[in-house]
Length: 603
Image 1 (tube, rainbow, N blue to C red):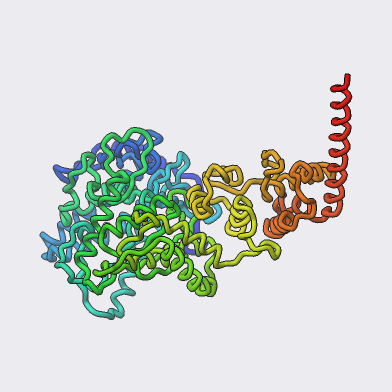
Image 2: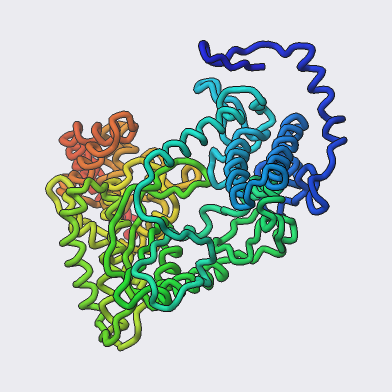
């Protein structure tokens, strides 16, 4: 047990006999509870939809309903808590004469505390001994955790308890009500795909749409919904009504792509559903905004396909991007969260009439010029090169939006998505990266890709989608560079020299020779000389040694490859001599072989 003391914090002890007796009596007390209404059971019986194992952790361990997330003691406490809120609300309306609207407001605030309390009151809430607190079940945000070893927040005091959460809620409300400023506004809840507004009636629309399949908002919050129904069924009866077959929240119009694990025969939230609904939502925004108005969209994704589909939806809605600003808003390393380092705020306007077609070559030149113009600003704002790649989508789409369509040399329309990889390549060009005084663009394509990747990410693990982006921007087939950035811990990471398995010959690229040299450095000068000899490479090739120097300097000091490349550099003169010796020996052997072959022909 843990007692909370205002003087000393938490004090841990063994449970008393009275506490153990109360625990033993819990199942009987739970079984005797009556249902709060003819339409609701005392304990939530709303079922977890199939295919949710990757989001609803308890379902992996046998939970089938949202009432299965707690032990009996926790369940009993929440049944009594939600019932108390409903009974107090009824008493306010029918005995104290409080208006239904006021009762709704008060019970709504109480329901909000229930929702917050749920975050630390199931079997997903383990104790964090280091921080001396209970973990949130939404530690991964997009999914609910489960643990066999959990910690129960009690009914007394301390973090996560009712008194603690009420205190913080009251403090927030008090601060808000103390100094009310501003202008009264009307706030309404509705559907983005069907707005109850007149055509061209708004100056601006601002939206932060769901990022494809990153978070399953409704499924993740069905646990909260199930308990809120029981607390608010008398003051908010509309919460109880749902057409969902499992008794959970409505999901027919939820605009996400649902990731499923296992069988989910009735799952409709596919990519096709997302594309159709997001385009419909953007179309509604275009309908209600004035011709000189703005539609601002905040979006971020590392997946090239997601960007392609989003931009297509914007175009279909009759909108064109006219401005964009990158911002570091979503950085996280949590599984299940939107792992984005940069989001893009995109300002769109209704398509202007009278736009003319553009030619692909001219549009590409405009995009490069626009990114080159923006680059000093990005640098001044402190954007990392990787963030600039995301930011480049904005100016690229702005340029494309100036034209009714973009045509290639044959007069065929070009997909707007074609210009995103070009924009990323333009960032590299604008940065004018040099590798030990050698312009990056002067290296072969495979080496250029590798050195640019190290420039951006060093040894960091990145999402596989980023590898696809970089392959597109480099105009390389993914298979041509996959060996340089292999899989690593649910992502990809630049290869270590010791893992390099390529065969070195006269066609090998600079990066292949450099990796082979680093791997051979542990075997001495002879081994390194053999690498250069096999490559049929000039031993003092400027580009090779520039790449080796760059890798030695760029990789972290504690990286084994930084040590290997440094070793190669320090022994450069010896490597050159060893290469010449190996080459001379190879030549001598080839001459002897020629003599032997000639003698065999004579005999």
